[in-house]
Image (cartoon, rainbow, N blue to C red; front, top):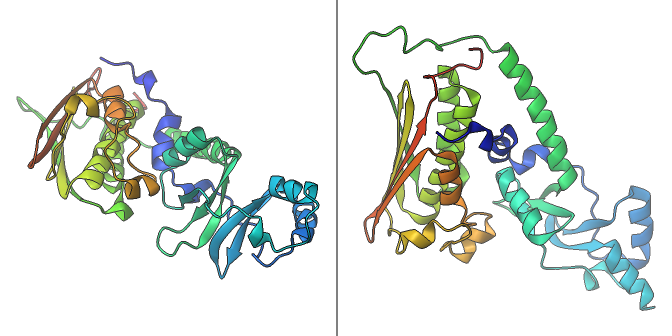
Length: 312
């Protein structure tokens, strides 16, 4: 059996928490028409090193202290910020899972990202690495107290039933390309397993693996089903989709390999780590795919010493 220590509480939370939950929404902005000569005073007064440039509530660009220094060093005439700002701004959506923000910080090496609304593209806030750390620490403290005070619910559910075989079944429908509801099925499953009194480490592994599988259905398929079977010593998650199938399963299992189109990557999905993350969470994983029909994925997670509660 794989060690549960491989999946930490922090790893679970970066899938669960959304960017909007930790971002700073009280953002200092400037107008495209603001003169460059005024930028220094704005940055000094607000104690910031850059600001989004907003035109009619829409993000037009971003201006930084470095931009100001270059303008000043060039001894150029005064001009509107719009002439010196960066227009191609890397952004995050407010409803993205925090894991996407973590990945983008690692990929681009930026100190901050502007956060916008997925629908109307309006500015929603700014997020820094410090915001992520602070948000995670707060959530860890809240969840710790919640687990400490949580009463026993159905922790002895299986022991109280007399049968040759006992199992609980759950099914979730997943719609293809429905990014608004991304992660909904895995969140519902996580909540259900919590009510059953499973150990948080087991729930953590199931939730992350199911989230990644759910996202693959949303990104690549027309839709699919997630079927879950809970038994005293094992949890089995079966994911079946109606999609094009995987041309090369061996390549698909390689970390970072992705066939997601550019528009999906722009939304913050399709980084190519899904199957690798599932494998890290699972004790056993089986993947079958047929071109033109779809993909079947089975995720086996063994429960040591039966279905355990945190209070056991």
